[in-house]
Image 1 (cartoon, helix red, strand yellow):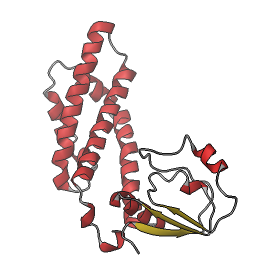
Image 2 (cartoon, helix red, strand yellow; image 1 turned 135 degrees about the vertical axis):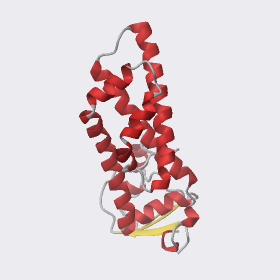
Image 3 (cartoon, rainbow, N blue to C red; image 1 turned 120 degrees about the vertical axis):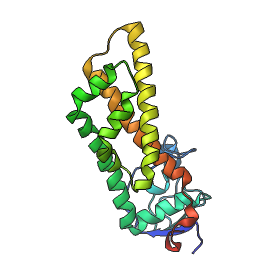
Image 4 (tube, one colour; image 1 turned 90 degrees about the horizontal axis):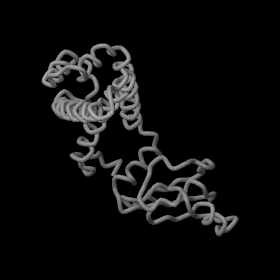
Length: 209
């Protein structure tokens, strides 16, 4: 089997694309489908992308390919129901929700942090909650990345919000909390993006390449 090609058979009907991709055909799907033959045995797509058309066709066999090895690896993991892959997704999703719970349980501390005149206490806040934040990372050595993003995002968000307050008046507490929750999730997203950008697809075991 070609390293960038997988065969999918007995495809279930109408699944929405699970990833956005440049040049996606979502908006043109209805027009494209009207020009498809009613019946065919094999579906071949050299550049699958988000798969909007592929996921809405019926055939006995499906061959998909793409120049992006990362993208085809993603399709392969979904096809094989790779448990390691799904466990990482579940952990990311759980962490996303846990951040919301953390904000809910620390409302007063976060509001006081926001209203403080000295932004240097942000570092102290992170240190006091270091166990929580360390539980968000995959390995302990990754924590420095998240710590950096937390400091950068919190300082930037609070600084911008206070400039807006100076012009338009004080923010209510619920908006302050919403802003800080967004800030913490932004830092977590940036941590994940950093891991992705430093990852080499060729480091995967051969069965995924």
